[in-house]
Image 1 (cartoon, helix red, strand yellow):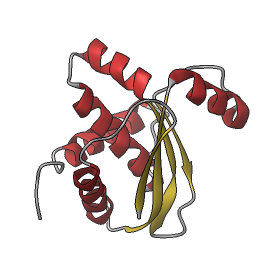
Image 2 (cartoon, one colour):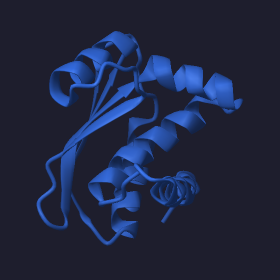
Image 3 (cartoon, one colour):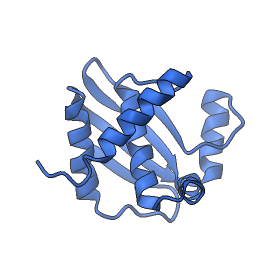
Length: 139
């Protein structure tokens, strides 16, 4: 099950299309879907989570809390839509494209992919690109 919540004025359009896509992303990693919650929020909301739970005093676009059990993926993915918009502007890509990248990024963390080292970041970026291409592919 995939749930979408908003703690700001952002409203995800095409929830069904996004749910279908995330399910395909999970299946493509040979995992099963448990409960994944996407919580859209602003920078300050996510900063408080970062400070409280991760002891980081920085803004970020995404924080994921993994509750996966074995091959069954689950957890909470907090996304700052403010930061996504700023990143989209900086990288000169549409907001929706950057949003999909971040949404895939959270699920990929649940699949075990990391992004601390240069090599891990390259692998994560390649996986994000691969999963983003699946958005408009119907199965």
